[in-house]
Image 1 (cartoon, rainbow, N blue to C red):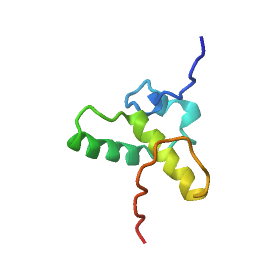
Image 2: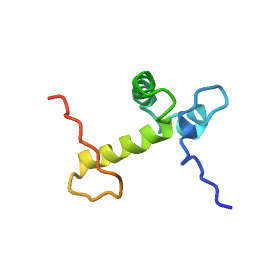
Image 3: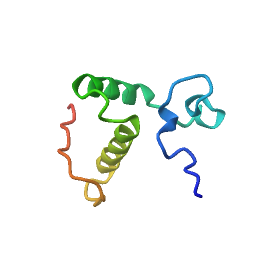
Image 4: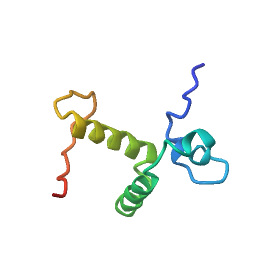
Length: 85
């Protein structure tokens, strides 16, 4: 059996005894408010369809594309959002 060691999106769960508030993540993991805002907007449009882990995966893809736009990523092609100028 292979342990995921936090790769399942559980770091996005709120609560007192969660990975989000665990000591190793306090100074390294951040930006939760952005994921929470995206999740809230998606829940209004499509209740119960998109998970926080899905949002994190897509955000990671676009984060990489912002740094290296020519890098081919094995992920379905989605329209790249316009960035504010």
